[in-house]
Image (cartoon, rainbow, N blue to C red):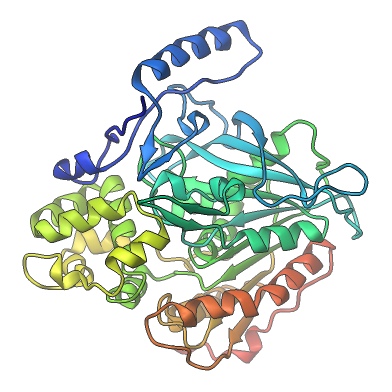
Length: 460
């Protein structure tokens, strides 16, 4: 019989009953020692039952083992992943390719080892460009904070609907379009999304960027792929994913010098979280304020103490509820709420954090744009985007230009499609996707990119 259990490191002591956590699963290994460990973990799993998050049973694969490898990007386990949308190919190979579920080791923002899940897809399409088949690491846009929202889970279940969960794998379209070019794709679930041992650290710059880079390492380590040591690497992400790829491009020289980047696409990146928090408060996606707060409370004691002292019962309930939600049910249950109803003072959460220097310093440390990005980057943002505000995304491009980065900036100029209802944020995702993939494919083919920094005045 399945049952929900409590996560360790819950953001608030009084929230723990609402948060799903740890189960122990079977690790498959060829070694006798690992086989013994697997048997022990199997017995524990049988006794405790699987993790269930908002009516969705999380496969045992997603529960990390107690011991992790030392090297970042090391494979912990892998298994076949059936794609939710797959067609038989004329040559017997499925279209768009063959998928493998992954768990790999990364390092979180505190410097501790962490297990991250994801997926690798070997495409059926032939790579027609110069050199061996390249690899694109895809960082998905906002999916939620519940483990059932994981992008790799969405590849298997493009639409998840239960009495409590509504999740759509909208970034699957970008994944399939990239596979159609002949590039291999690795998708990261980020820290804590899918993996059942902790909360997803939503928009945490270090966690996200490192998870992207280590996904590349994990894909390279996977046996039986067509990747070679000469395979070029590109990064693709929009919204939360745009922030993750932007962060990865900055972190690569120091964190992953073995992962040279041919090109990085960062669409609608939340580079300035203070500005972004103000944009999402009161919007259809106000739940993202809960996800980011939950993640930072888990990682940083100074934020934990501040919010514990300033949230009222409604705020505690909102953070507990959103911690297991995907985007769909979060919009239905909390869309257009304001965080002023969640605090004892009636002030927005952003103002509460700004009044405490140590907590504000946590958000300031998440700022993307303080380092020069590795390789050419393309930043695109809708001029009317009011969820991940256009101005702060454009400022990222300016900051990178000031550091002599090879930056291609694209302002996606669409009509205003409605304030705070997500349309101004989502429309550029679709309308710019073809250009973004074309630009990235050129980089994977070895074509040089020409910066357009000269078109942008550097003054704020």
